[in-house]
Amino acid sequence: MSKLSRKILISVFTLVLTVAALVATTYAWFTLGDTVSVGQVEGSVVSGLGLEMRLVVTDPQNEGEYSFKGPWTSYITSDDINAYLTTINFNEFTAVTSSDGETFNKLQMSGGASPSLTTTAALPSDYIKLEFEFRTQGQGDIYLYDFEMSDNGIVTWTNDGVKFNDPFGVEVPADTGTVEEQITNSLRVSFFGKDSTLVVEKDAGDGNVRGKGNEDLEPSVELIDQGAHSFFVSRNEHLKSTYEGLLGTADLVETKDVTEVNDEGGTKVTEVDNTNTETVNTITYNIATLTVYIWVEGWDVNAYNPVFGQQVSVNLNFRLQQD
Image 1 (tube, one colour):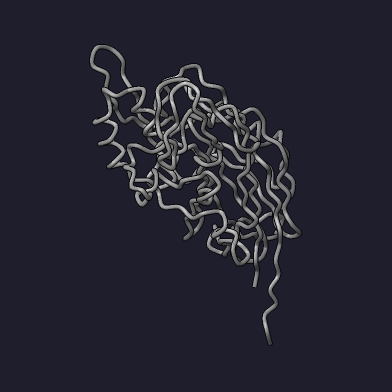
Image 2 (cartoon, helix red, strand yellow):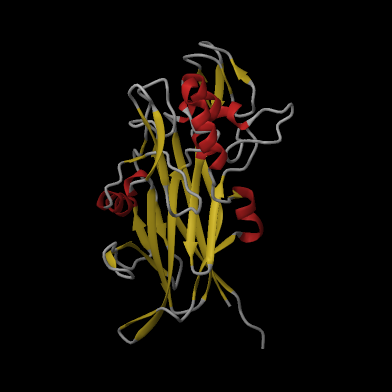
């Protein structure tokens, strides 16, 4: 007798992020005060038949316990998401960096007669962390599919200082030179579930250079002379050697691009089995967990002045496949 395969679909919220305008012209991703603000969260979370979900918040003082549990539901509203962000004191992104997709650091530049760059742990309010629980009476794998990162399109930014190179190593002339950029080029989203880890970055091309830069540019252009790195050094020549050393040792988390994630029906992000259960009114449910992080990667070659002032949408869709 053959097994029946059943797919349950969940259409999950669209997150709309508004990016604040810069207040200075010497931006580096670790400069204090230059942040990305969240304007609003739109959309909803809808689960399919037989599958429910809820927002939860881990208690930092008690391992394995939650300090907040939302109600089990098939519909999580935009207001619920916004209320959650309020409880964790999230107001704005500060560009950070991660080597594993779940722990984050940032750099700070000190002033004074001898400016320096130092590494410090990021604050929980510098990025978004979302925790979900799913429950169902069945078992199976949960897939991310039709994932999308979008924004309000290409922005043309006029250079307001000395010349530098864009992310492709092409010179942007002083004062009147222009460069085109999109905020999604420096965005990252990671997913941590049972026996599954996934980190997503926008596809290369259409103005995007993935990661810290392209080491295979033709003609050859060093990483330090590409995009955000070139921009910072052009404004802070005295810190070039320090910056270049940090850039060289920066270990960014390995990513998949959006196309790869969506291929062949999506990518598994967690699974539901009977190792974690909950019984309610004699009905036993199997529980699955999923943690999602969203951040702006500071070492990304596209993370500099032109990205600010844009809006971003992150579309998350999940399906549960049961055998």
